[in-house]
Image (cartoon, rainbow, N blue to C red; front, top):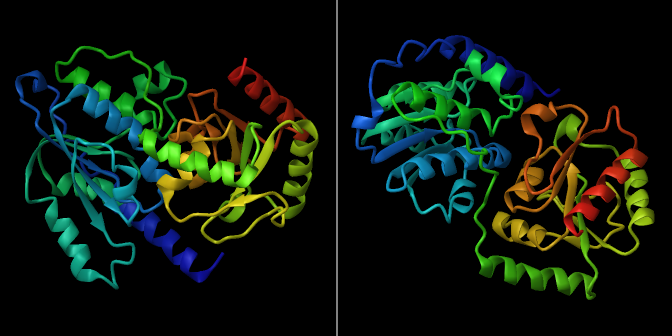
Amino acid sequence: MSIKSNINNVRRKLMHRLTKNIGRSNFDKTANITKVDVKRILICRPNPRLGNQLLITPLLQEVIATYPDCKIDLFVNGNAAPSIFKNYHNVNQIIRLPRKPFKELHNYMKGWMAIKKHKYDIVINVVKNSSSGRLSTQFASGKFKFFGDDIDDLTNTFTDYKHIAKGPVYNFRHYLNLLGMPKNNNPVPPLNLKLAPSEIAEANKLVQDIVKNNKKTICIFTYATRAKCYNLNWWETFYQSLRDAFPEYNIIEVLPVENVSQIGFKAPTFYSKDIREIAAFIANTAIFIGADSGMMHLASASLTPTVGLFCVTDERMYAPYENNSFAINTTNTSTAQSIEIIAALLNKNFA
């Protein structure tokens, strides 16, 4: 592990200790939210990773479904949010912190001060362990503040409560129920980039330019960060198994921004830095297969059947769901068994 990574780990642990109790007693269960005309909401998820921002789209859909006329401000980090939330018309303002605060101290302070400009009806911290999320929720002005702490009753009620996209939705519903709203037992919304039909149509041309046939296409992504990235030998075996098992399908590899391939570019490839174009490209394929990564969540948000490969991270927290998606733990699932799972999903999708 690099010196930079060690410093970041120490910083995160220190900030977590300092902020873990912020907001614990700041929730008034005697209030009645049904008597409030909820018009403005702040959602705090100041993390720059693509996957972490995509994972708040189910909560965003839930908030909009509950308050269709509300204006939502997002407090985030980095540059991905404008593309991710482009078609969420309730999003009024995206307040962005720079990824490197010490190099852009003015913009960093400007971002924090921006959340004090309005008085919000509801302020939501998405992830309980986010130090900056808890701080921003405390810092903002709001009638009702939800800090995202685990609810024991929900842990026992929902087997998927641990999922980092679903838990915040269950929490939001729970808080509203405590404040006078009726219970909501609807399914948790999926990740959704809300691709426009025109985006999908344009990307279909990109797929056809590569395959030049009418066969369905399997999309793979062979990269991931750090220990989540499977090695060259693993992918070589897996890719050959895919080719042998599905000769009637095209196989295209979507490349990461680093423009590297764990199979040595043996499959036709697609490269883009535009996350909406990538998602629309994946939406024109039959299934996406890749390790736990931002690209896996992007595939899921394109509403494409997504197979997530897990060997380090907890699939209970990050597994793709809905649209016949599936998580495979490769530490206890062989390549042959994985191929059988993929075959069953393809048969189910096109039965």
